[in-house]
Amino acid sequence: MGQDGVFVRLLQWNILADGLGDDGFLSTEYSPIQEAGGDGAGYEASKFMAMVREAKQQDLANGIVAKMAELKTAQKKIKKATTAPEREAAAASVTALQAEIDAHSQLVKLKRRFDTSPQLEAVGQNILSWDVRYDRIKATILAARPLVVCLQEMDHLQQFARDPAFGAVYACSVAGEYVPAAYGGDGGDDLRPYNYLRHLLESRTAFAPKSYSHARNFRTKRLAKATGAAGDGAADVVDDDGVAIFWKRDVLRPVELGFLRIPSSDAQKSDGAVAVILEEIATQRRVSVITAHLPSGDETKKELERLAVLVDTTTPWTATRTVRGTDGTWTEQPYGGAPFDGLLSFVQHYADGSGTTLFALDSNSRPGFPPVDAGVDRASVWTAVAARPGLRLASMWVQTGRLAPDGGPPAGTTGMPISVNKMRGPASTQPQKIGEHQCELIDHVYTNGPRSQLVQGVDVQTGAKPYTMPTAPRVYAGREGPAELELLPSRTVPSDHLPVVVDLMLRRGPAGYVGVPKTAEG
Image 1 (spheres, rainbow, N blue to C red):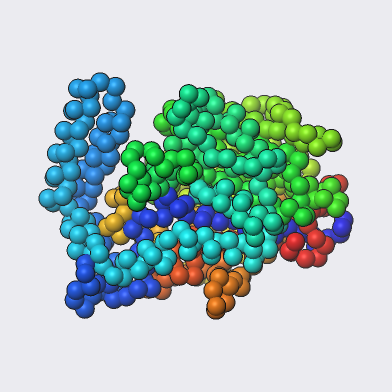
Image 2 (tube, helix red, strand yellow):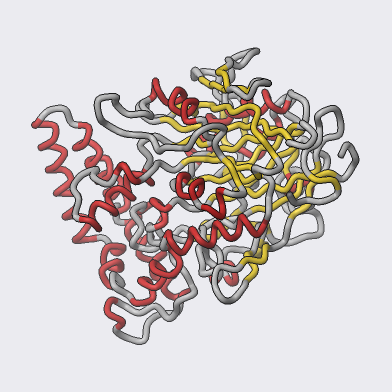
């Protein structure tokens, strides 16, 4: 096996959390779009999207979108209030803001007009339904046959692990069975800040959930409403969304599992990155895999938040790991060396070791994001990864010729590759994102191996008729035209992101290979 041409196939995918999937995503597969009750001839998809954008612009201009943000803040104050007067003041603010929004918002009016549109309901039932999406996600992964799977927005980890077909092929836990974090009770919350890393370590699972996540909150409310339960009655059957790593259990075994806690602007919340060192069972050669999910948002302040996740020397960072001994037992071991100062230093710890390091993430930042003032330098996520001293990781988009080293299109090419193509309609709970056509490349895989090759499409069958699941990237000249008519999720693609399937050549050297010689699959 110590020969040139050894690859590991990796699948990188933000699968769109179940708890976040019911957020008004638009689709062009059911058109024309009729108003509530199916009245009228309806509107072609492009016309309907133009109506959404126009309503959003009107709400921005008259200050209603800002009022929507104020409403969310007031609703949070009710939950955090510690005295009756505080709760009463916050409740009065909520009532006044809601009345103003209902009376003047063009988005609210549009939502009412299309509230029971047959076409939008079909999108919910046939595209956004988790049962439908789960089958397609699972079938895609199994058909792609990756050795390593990195997923973001995973809020059904237990379902994947217990699935007889999926669980027989892929593992995520190093010992025992994964159990979702508990909230409340005599022991407090499992994911409270000072217990976050301890809980992850004791889970023995390559999964780092976001504590108190929106996905869990939305899904709990949805299930409670459907079953007539009150409050958090359904919380014990739902999970937070987070990042996860799976590996092919008959080819690889884990020898180290590590976690980095990512601080939040909300002191009560936590997020995390996961690292696993995997050993090929047949040869004991190793590969390190790290995955993460950076904050979303297209504003400059959001890029600054993402940069602070990558490097922040002013914030205390904490990490922990457990290591498999020669006798098969797992023991907690501290990380040696200098303290971490962000996600990139965590990745570099593994890159500095032997073997190949693979870093897969949803960066929520396109390569061409304008550099922002970050301390003494101007930077973007793309330039920060490239400029990290000693990291020496290459983007597989550059290795495969889809991007130039500066993040732009290669010489002589037009258009930009994309991995996400979505737009939210008036039913979304995120007013700032309604009408925003996000069509860009934000899913990335970095490697210190010498070469990569993309897998173009995966043949999948979830019903009577097989189909080809498109994989990233798609290339569009712009956001208008074809891109606008091929929004995700769709009846083929079960997420707002395309899966990235890539064969990565591994570094040559002692313990530097893993995988099957001269093949990309396990």
